[in-house]
Image (cartoon, rainbow, N blue to C red; front, side, top):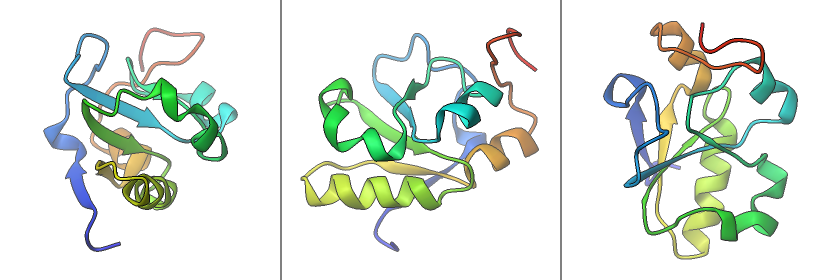
Length: 111
């Protein structure tokens, strides 16, 4: 797992909605996503990634986030075997919230 690049949340924008050059792939489960996610992120739970690979713009810079980084690393290892590169958001959503970055929920714009 040492080969996979990790990006600190402090180097990322708060919103990926209009970022055509980067994709933030959130691989957490549906309940985790509903509890709060990064605006503009693409949600594909870990187990669905192989069957939904076509939904990911693999020509863009790929950043993968989960709760704390474990699932992100697994997805990135899988993608590496498929010939694609990406980076892990270091510390996942735990680090995102810890740094006071905004999250979006179904019932609120951001927290």
